[in-house]
Amino acid sequence: MDAYIESRVFDLADYIISCGATVRDAAKEFGVSKSTVHKDVTERLYSLDRAKARDVAAVLEVNKEERHIRGGYATYLKYKWMREKKDQTD
Image (tube, rainbow, N blue to C red; front, side, top):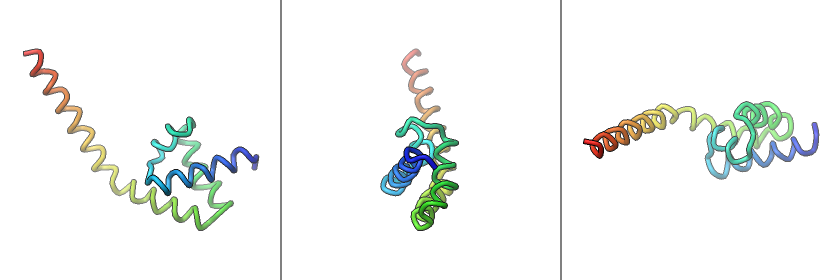
């Protein structure tokens, strides 16, 4: 594995663990795709540092359990914004 990839894997893992970040958040922060982040923190990290891989997996599992809440909240905000926009034009 190239040194820059290994460095990115550990940087992503540290970011996800410290911030409780989602894959999407980490991808945006590091300027890589969600697929790259997922592959880095699941496959590549597991072969480099299994303990850290378990920590990342725990954070990602929490995020997975909460995603329906975040999705529902995003929908709520969307329609609230649409109502407010409509009220301003009336």
